[in-house]
Length: 431
Image (cartoon, rainbow, N blue to C red; front, side, top):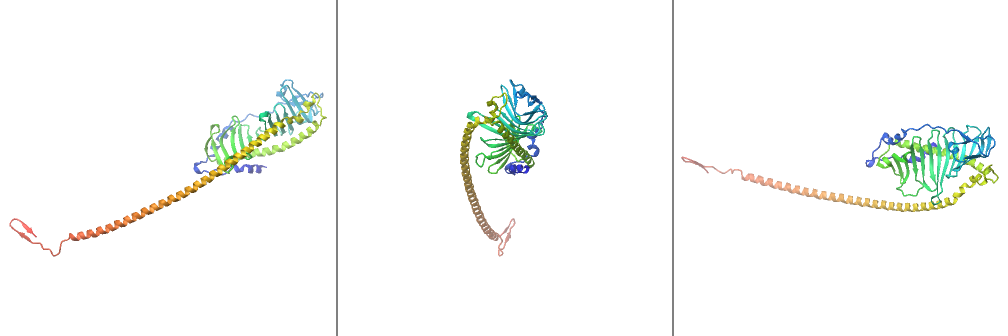
């Protein structure tokens, strides 16, 4: 299962390009935000105080586990429809806790002793807060795995959310958050130190090819704000790494070192493994629930001190949400169809933009080719003119040299000339 989990998200690793001026961060820089959260540390986990109450429908000693919050509620009373052994609740049964302000029921199996926490299946119903949970306790508190369902029953805005995962013995909570009215899936690896590794998967959301497909973030659990770095994978296959600043704002695109990318992917893989483990636990717990409800909802089951409507509320409690659920589902499907149409229109626009950009690129290439041709033609013409001017200059030089030679000859003395000098008393005259 581990290898499968890693393969499922390894596509996010990618190869972050460093072209276009994108720098590569060091491991230390990428891990600064995460390390600051881990440095907070965490308080040690103390198991809750073991408290018990006597079910009002039992005459024999039958200690039933409870908690301080329940004991302090006004008119609190508890019922147990299972057996009793050695003065403790025993076997398969339902723990019903009621007061003026709450109504919680739990189907579980008790071991008939004070120490029967380990390896217990349980199904919890909170009828006031519209919350159900399927769980299986581990060897040591707080280890448990299972499925929680929360219902927001506002008729104008009905929704329900599922959390499938586990809490390990160190108190780390790992789960998958989904809803039948939301296309995205959110994988959470919540460490007790307060650092959260979150993968949001938008695979099922209708969107164009330039939309985000998956995102890995590091989140501060106290502020629910992302920080440090983020990895995005787009539907067209592009992978982008981002450096985040205060408030989760993008500071720059910067490549995350592969070692740190692998570290984040391992946290996502941990979540996927935990979710697979939790799913197995849920199936075991649901089997226990089916067997109990078969007994409790057959029309013959009675609990002393409880009216039939209260005792059988667990059998039909979910029926109150059927109409709201159906309406919300129709509305959600309508929204998804609108998003599909919008995505198709966006994809068509993108295709037109790509075609337009391709045409522009082709036109630019033709223009560049023509410009180079014009440049080459101009250069050739200039070269020809220079060659012609050079030839003319050489011809002129030759003519000048010939003329100079001739002039030099004109300045030379004639060989047949004679010089005659006549001297008188004062001057000498030569001809």
